[in-house]
Image 1 (tube, one colour):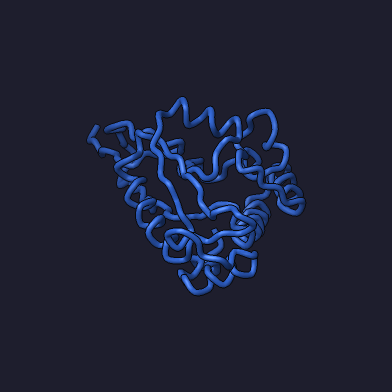
Image 2 (cartoon, one colour; image 1 turned 90 degrees about the vertical axis):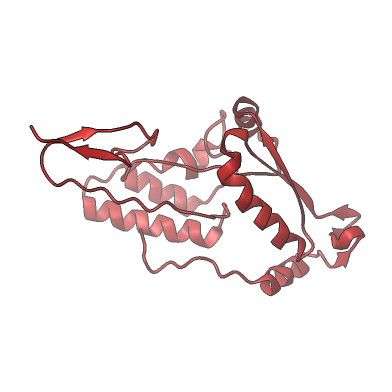
Amino acid sequence: HDPSLKPVEFDLKKARERLTAAGWTKAGKGGVLEKDGQRLELTIIYPQQSKETTEPKLVDFKQKAAKVGVAINLKAIDWSTFTKLLDDRKFDGAALGWSRDHDGDLKQIWHTESIGNKGSNFISYSNKEVDKLIDQHRATLDKDKRNELARKLQRLIYEDQPYTFMTERLYSLYAHQSYVKKEKDTYNYTIGRTFWQITNQ
């Protein structure tokens, strides 16, 4: 993690300025921006299973987007339909979360080679410098060098903003002695668990 990277500033004025620069200057019905006869309207899909946690964030995003002339429709769908739409690249926007271990393989999500064959780079993000750094990261065993490469990757992806990063979980893991018993499965794709129980043996 690169601690020097700060969250992108929330600024509706700058957002509107960027839309104007991109040619979205005319406000049509309902205040929605138009260009060449096309409304600036999109649909964001998200899994029905995560509706309770995801939908409130998306509703807030939708309301703020409307203030700058962007119409957003929200659609909760079942997981199998959701993943098929991702695989087929048939969506305007999608909301979901990623989990990985503390030093995982970044190629799965961010590398150009992961775009085809229904790979996990379903947003078709492609940056030659990112590809190069990922390849170097995968071939490097030295921990400090791997961390340096990961921070460079994080900065490039941060600057490109291929995702709209909304939240990040903060985990704290504690162990007070050598006897640690797993209490419950939290279904995280990580080397640790959120809840642990210390037992005397």
